[in-house]
Length: 274
Picture 1 (cartoon, rainbow, N blue to C red):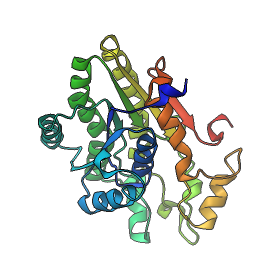
Picture 2 (picture 1 turned 180 degrees about the vertical axis):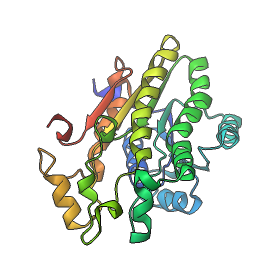
Picture 3 (picture 1 turned 45 degrees about the vertical axis):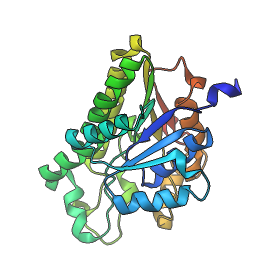
Picture 4 (picture 1 turned 180 degrees about the horizontal axis):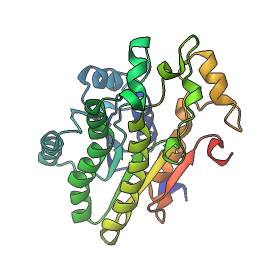
């Protein structure tokens, strides 16, 4: 059974690869001997991630490409560049997303639905949902032609329940000025599950599987009030460590999960079952 986890001679492309979980996904696949194509619109972030990873893994197994998931032209360009270099994508991890953070009182009001900007709606959906569709379209076509492939969409525990807005409460702010998780985040993460189910049936007869991973909150030195409030909603009593999703990614991107298709795997410390 251990041999089924091997990704030797497989190539995986990760979007949003310079972000917190993007780097963890790369670690997970590099541990299994995959070649990893790291893509991101952030060139500086990509270079930083590459330098961090090459301290542990052979740099010949890591390819970096600047790519804008909101642009079909940009995605197609990366795909063509890889093809010209003899590189076919076996695994696609749709990880790119905008996770809006409330950083100052000036941002608070526009996070609320009453004042949410259509421009923000369009931009965030273009990254988190349209981008996933475009990457699945462009790289999935090649997978289907080749007779095999895996697409993994990174969603969130908010793909199965609504945000608990009291988590984001700030002292001394009036109720109509309190920050909230914006509507786009929920819509995108729920939408990714719909995309997952659609893709799972679309190319199944051509050997392409699609599943979703829905992580819970990851601890990244958030303020104590937020951490305590969220931890109280989780049966295990804590947030996730960033590396705790590696095993799930390894399972879902390898032949170890060869009969899994169209599923949303929620790993949230039990929060969604309460």
